[in-house]
Image 1 (tube, rainbow, N blue to C red):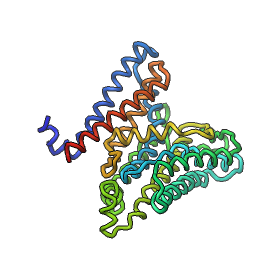
Image 2 (image 1 turned 135 degrees about the vertical axis):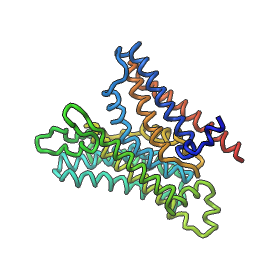
Image 3 (image 1 turned 135 degrees about the horizontal axis):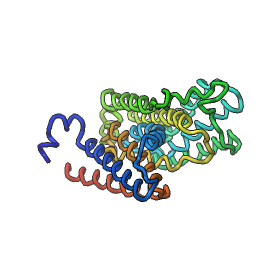
Image 4 (image 1 turned 45 degrees about the vertical axis):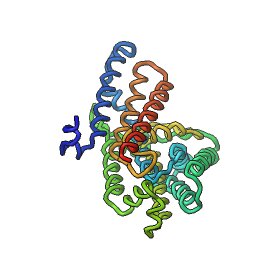
Length: 334
């Protein structure tokens, strides 16, 4: 096993990522068997995979964003409601006020960025604990979305909209005859590559990781820690705004006051992928694989005719095991 771990290819790909991919393949096999025996009588097929990917797209953007925050040693519980708030505001401007689609999509990103700036300012410059700040902004996002839409759900245009307003759904999937091309997966992976480059190959990313390792040492070395810590939350908010675009691209209706569960699933994806809750260690690739596992977990449970509540139980167990493994690993290194 040690020879396998130390082989050049495994070191380049990452042992943890290889294990996670193996777990994902095993889950697919087990869920297919379960679906054939106690579910629909058929294994997981292309429709199940497309459904899982629809869920993974927006969740992946949330996971990428919160990875930056967790890398600093912080946390953000507002990303799910912020995503819904952005989708509600952009959808209201599109459906009720007749704004152009492209403008409304940019509004989604701007709304997410504004919440990210607010969260970063509260944590980095005002010294609020990230837990308190993000909880407060979570409630504010719910309230703003509800007030802006007068507590009404918003339905974005369908792909077959007679006015051609549903073109943005091509960002998620493109119909090519009888086949469907998962454009959302391509854009998600490209975004993950960009985020990985930012985190691992830029000054901003190195400072973000250093903040999680030893914030006081970074401050004493003359670095403006407030600026870089705030940047992590701004990036998280911007990616939450992007997640809103992919949520409405995959689904239709956005309801006010929702989004809490997506916080936990995005954070679970990060932890599962190897990002340390103590900060200083983060993996964008691991977060994407963790997202795909969460999406497959949901689809597999539904295919087996179980209630979604089972997903929360299993996800909770996975998070406990992942955090425990991280703690054990840090103790061994120390």
